[in-house]
Amino acid sequence: MNNIFKRKLYSKLLKWKNDSQGRTAILVEGARRVGKSTFVEEFAKKEYETYILIDFNRAPLHIRNLFDDLTDLNRIFLMLQQQYQVVLKPRKSLIVFDEVQNYPSARQAIKYLVADGRFDYIETGSLISIKKNTKDITIPSEEERVTLYPMDYEEFRWALGDTVSVDLLRQFYNNRSPVGAAHRKTIGDLRLYMLVGGMPQAVDTYLTTNNLSIVDQTKRGILRLYLDDFQKIDASGNAERLFVNIPAQLSANANRYVASAVIGEKTENKMGELLQALEQSKTVLFSHHCTDPNVGMSLNKDLLRYKIYLADTGLFVSLCFLDKDYTDNIIYNKLLNDKLEANLGYVYENLVAQMLASSGNGLFYYTFPKDEKHNYEVDFLLSRGNKVVPVEVKSSGYRTHRSLDVFCEKYSSRIGNRYLLYTKDYFQDSQTTCLPVYMTPFI
Image (tube, rainbow, N blue to C red; front, side, top):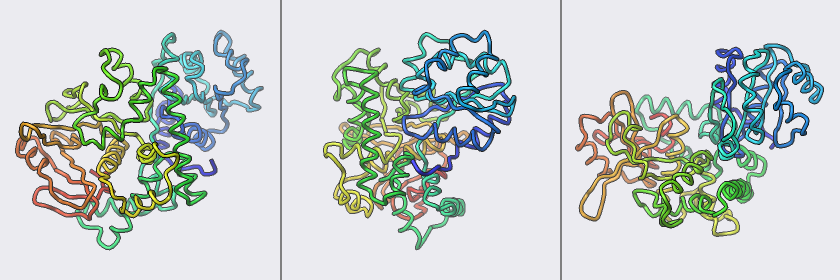
């Protein structure tokens, strides 16, 4: 990868460094190819005088074995400096355990390395392998955790050299005013983000080639890595099938992911293991049905009723067309210009899920009966103070929002602001605020 991208998580790592002063290590979790190693090494270069990065995918055996015996830390540090030709300086140097899930003893050693206090420690790991490889070790309590997600829309715009437009959009949102003549270009910019996505490798490919078909090949390569990972943790292929069927389940417009329709009936324990593997891979986002739409929704989530989204909408688009060997530029151009003859509501719904999660929101939704055969559904519920903020998503410009209206009447005392996210410009429709989808992160 040629480009180093600015990531918002950088400020959290800097706060950890300044606040912790070596009293804790930090684990940067995230899906494969989300840019953890590049991001952490960039932080190491800028914030420390010297650093050592130990890649446990490639570290020689004698380096790995250093962490099996911690009786002589001086010897360990001396061996590391000799191997990597770096001079470590107390309180001015960082040691990075990259892909630490591949050598659990090193992660267990963090407790004693932190207690020694001479250096700072950052670990990186992909959770899909971490749990499997840590069942027999003691997880250090001295370890903080943060998650690196795919690049959000603002980080994507930064990568394209645009450092002003999202800040300007935030001002339009705060002023509750339409974007006006710039809306058409802005919604087009957002569709480009939907197609490329936020995986750094895909963004780098786009910047290098300006060719969406080549970008699609990059994304398919990432998807193949994910499918291989799911095969490793579940040889039956059920985890892989659950992942591959996410677009089909969303496009069916059902009010839940019906796992039994994909892999058949399973015991509750087996199904729980499979779903946990998906969730811990960080490749997907779960949205749970809320049984009582009120603040503190995590206390009222239905563990058996959920929707699943991909953590990256760019990968989601490629997964939608996985039945073809490649997604050609004709399809991409039609998507980019909003000309594809298909109901793309589920793509926008996945995009909103990604945007809300990247902004730190838990994902919840709510359905309730309309008649004997139909339900009303509110796509997302957010907690803001002591109020619930309902959000409905439309892929078109239509401002109809019957489900939102009935929900707000039903729970009027609990409702704060209410939003319809769609592809047109800002509009205030009575008590419902209609927002262009690109304003989702500001809610």
